[in-house]
Length: 389
Image (cartoon, rainbow, N blue to C red; front, side, top):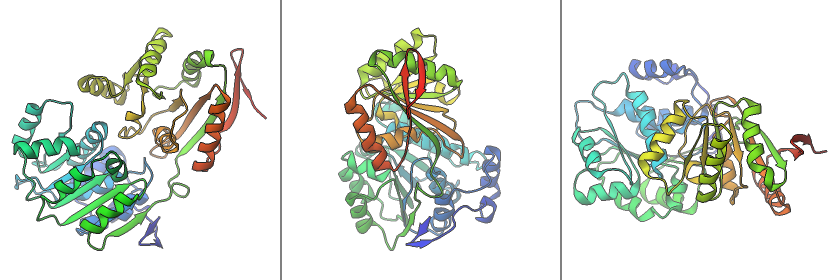
């Protein structure tokens, strides 16, 4: 890890960060004792109300990096919105809300609300009527609430843009800047991003003051422990092999990624026909159903989650045993975010990518070069997996 370009050791004990007994109790309940590098780097500066811009891979504990200072700063007796987190997707917003509620467990009077599209506006208005100090939101839905005057941001002190690169790539830059302009008393802005795009740096230049730059490299201390496999096979064997990989590996929680919504629906049905408990999420599925499916998966009541890349970001689940790329991802970044669902929280993970054509093999070669990764080569023939020399 580097802070302002200088090497720094970020893996420190939470008990050295001057945290409150209530936060320490919440962390101890989760069994967490050592901060990840991005947490060790960001927490002290955010506690001091400094602006930061943190570049760190997915799965490195960014939510607690900004969530701990946010909850520590929250004043229970103050019923105004004091902190805002902007996230690019509904799934990520809901996951951040869940993590913040964990941190608030022993902080009575600190409330969190989550605002996102595709859900009842009236229900969210009722949540805001309970006077949350912390709001997590997607930009579009937050703009809707501001337009309806169901929410005020004039007393917000801390703002965090999570997955800032993704949010700005999705076209939210105008919404984000309008929202930032509505907070005259903002004391600090934290931006957490996997990449530092031009748009991210533009926001930093306009809205941050002397930001602390924190960089955590995936190739060093935080590279997940993921065994990667690439498997050549006939396209007619893809569904059969997918089920066999899950069963043979004894995986209790697996995510299977497809490139299209139609394929995700079809594959989930085919896996259920094989006797596997499989659910599906993608952009055309009603939000309430998606939430129920994700809740079942998080609680270990659903063994297989079939998803499009809408779920590659925003799923922050520590114990996914395996990821299967039923379809080769179309972008290198999608591959990183897909396999990053496993091998989290210092656990061992495994990923499989199924290749049924020369074009897909060439595409996988490109992914390996771009990610500096190396997948073990296997071939599936006559119901047997063989090593490729």
